Image 1 (cartoon, one colour):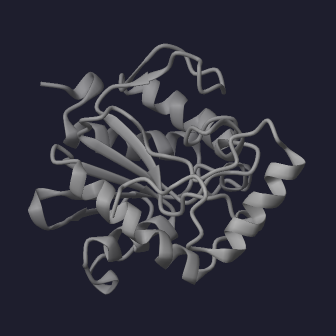
Image 2 (tube, one colour):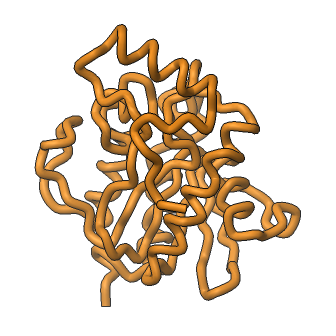
Length: 216
């Protein structure tokens, strides 16, 4: 399977219908499956849940245009894993160094909640994405759904790798999986995730990947 779905992917009828309605309501937005973005030969792969309606679904770049992106790109900059300044736009000139970002589900779901069948249908793209990135050493998953889908895409049993913020899992093929709560506004507003907690996990993933300030 191609790592990137076609712009009119019809694997998930509910998401395709939602995409169609968004195209009618917001004709100037991206409104398509959001492709992976970042360094084409990364050592760290970050896996989120799905595009936000007014974030990546609008801009066409993962985590660009919403609060989760503000925190993610600020933290990557602190780790030295980016060049340029993030400005909530796909043409802001920001570049990632050794990092690539993708989502477990490529299309925006209603209420930001994909259902199980949609997560399963989109998993082939995640599997193909990982297979195409031979230099990846670290994988950082944001949230339990991304964690579970990542394990399934690698054919691994979820019971052997329990999700937990800050958890580190040694996977086959010398991959190391790092877990974090999703950097959503809800999680930070409720105190479930602080910027310090998030920074600690991102830095650990970057350090293992040997990128940014942790490069050899």
